[in-house]
Length: 98
Image (cartoon, rainbow, N blue to C red; front, side, top):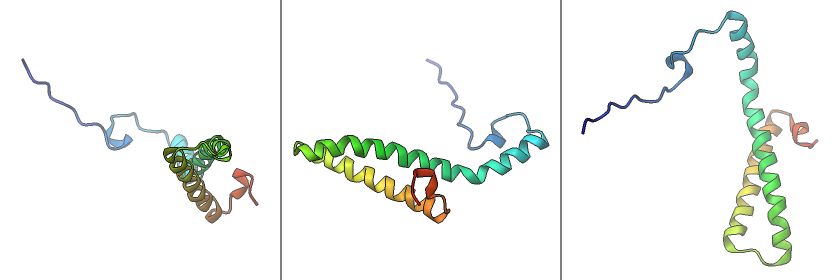
């Protein structure tokens, strides 16, 4: 049986063999890159909030397992971390906060 040579995954788009960006596209990308941490924080917050809301009903019923309780605590931690990122950026408005 012949062995196959594995090609390592690219570590960034620069070395991935992609076509170079036009100067207009590069400028647009440069303007959007600083917003990615905020977009990520909003997505994490919203996802964790939905999960926490689902588990909160279970907690109120008194039928929550230890694993579910840990999952609720983890969701609350994710929400707090995301809120901190958004607070530092002055963008709590993105999650309905003031």
